[in-house]
Image 1: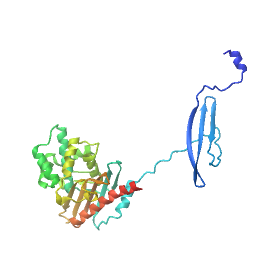
Image 2: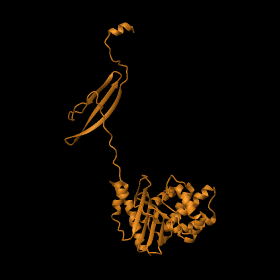
Image 3: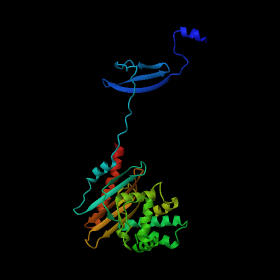
Image 4: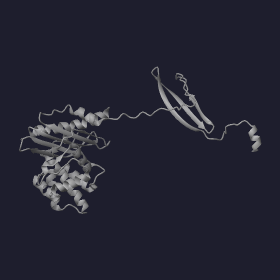
Length: 321
């Protein structure tokens, strides 16, 4: 084009320049009927423009100015306070004077968790899961399989809660030092192995026991798949007289657990604990419930079972809303 002739012409926007469009939809309620208004922001090299288009049933609304950005902020899904729901559910659980209880739950489907109570408790025999997990981790590190004798101890320790077998494996892992070292890798930050041979007086929290269960049953674990499968299998074959605890929250026979019970010689009061995996309405949950100060073993069992049921119900109620 001739340069001088172009100066004499009136400038026109190029028809070949692309327009950039942003579509933003909003809805307003008019007389009980949702009416939609769509604003289309068109911007090209030569300047912004705004076009408004409304259906016939919609009430007229003022168009935004040329320089006004037509936008609607996205509305976020309301978050669910799982801890608050669990606290509410636990109000229905009767706790006797002098007793204390803590519970933690993890939904294997949604990966959401909740915890009630942050006290520290004696593990009693639930530490046997931790002892075997530690032994399996040490065997993995050494690139070896468990020996026949170790497997015999492991089966008796988990399925029958045999104390002599637990003591043998406690010594094999290096007692508290071995347990504490493995627990650092497992993500247990508030668990301390018992002094000397006193593995049952290992100190822990419900939150830490939930972390341990995630190592046994979860996807992101320090344990190999074969180690997880082995430990899960033993927890699913608990002796009949120990079919209590978190299994009370299951809707059938799909559960795996380890219980712990200990009468303290100084007070005569009972530590009653239960940890494991349950299935309810096709959903898997990991549950850890700890208690102490129970006047009898029976009352302690009732307490941890009620806590486990409340923990699972808190998640089911939220899903139903």
